[in-house]
Length: 325
Length: 288
Image (tube, rainbow over the protein chains, first blue to last red):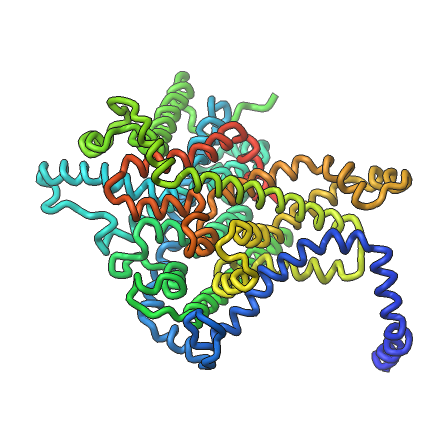
């Protein structure tokens, strides 16, 4: 009953005055609207609209020329779900993240622990060295490593073959067994600096007296690490993990530049799969099908959103448990 | 006086010094290995083509061959790529700082009707992954007539960076006390004047952080300029140009190395001069 009368009040009192109120709001807050408008317009046009439009495109068979007219419903999704090449790319994407993240975070934490020693001279210098690859683009890093592997890698091959340690030279980027692992290794090198700086900041925020108390209680270096460092790093560590997983699932530049997804799709990830289908179909002997590529992109996007939501939930749960103690 | 705590086990009296030396040896050695790819590409950019293949891993070129740079600059079109990258980076960075700080300012300091709706939408969008809507984005830019123009690259990159940076500015403006602003209002200043003459100068640290990160992101961006210049090689940025250059120059490796150095050097220089700010901004991000 109360709800009904509220609804009644709204229609009777607020609705007739709405144009007036809107006019007054614009007059009173005119500058505020003018100041958010550029942001809203750009985000609406180039972020929100493509999100909505991408759903529309997935429902059509379309080669990108003219307007999409051949409606196919959800057929593209069925095709994506049955395409072994998509699942191969999907598997490689998760493999990339599953191998890169644990190795990179372990190395970053180890380095951070070494550099966090009190009174270590030049620790800002070391920090800058390990951080510097981060400021260069993944595409350039890919080019540099391709050249390095092609040149120095060749010399190492020759040496190993002459020593009889290798029966045949290894073509690191041209061998389906090695292509993805090599890209992963370069990926680890490229973004390790971020995690190093994150971990260093987290380590430096641990109060000193916790370590002192632990030492008074007779804890050794290992004991202090297990009973002080690890519990204090848990929350921020989870966020670092979360960022590392999300970042690595969206890998594109490194793979495209170093291997183009090859050889024989051995290093194809979802983003390069989509790129090839949408923009350079000839490189994978396929016909351009924007609708199909959009469906694959949409599918992956939904998956990443699900993963993000799950991880955010995990962070929140741990926070609650920590504050509940 | 608190006891000196080290995360290292105590050893002999000289143990601490030894540990320090060993740590430095390890960190320096690893650091050299870590930077080797950069040093190698720098050295290779000065080598003669034949020398490149003969003395692969060497970091010392026999003679400094500057003409590799001249070749990459002129015939590798790096003059154009460099110009394009500078234009895109400066325009996109400036626009993000301006638009995000304006929106962040009014979102934090005024309570206009619809504010909560805008905020809710922004938070929702922030958790959506980027990159998967490239196809409709491409169609949109095409229908706006911005395909094959630097402006197309700029607006797409700016739009993609706005949500996160607006929230950053909003958070920063919220920490600035009301008094200063109220004093300005009493003096009869309207909102744009207050923003431009008082609030934006006060937000200098955030302007620096956002500017620095946007500079880096725009200089290095690859995916957007790649897709949006597929039809017009003249508009390639350095990252895209490098990718194309490698494809077109399977033999001229020393030129490619020179191109790589030209692409890396500016951003590295910015980093080394401002590395404290870079690293503090990254470290601050994780604490927040």
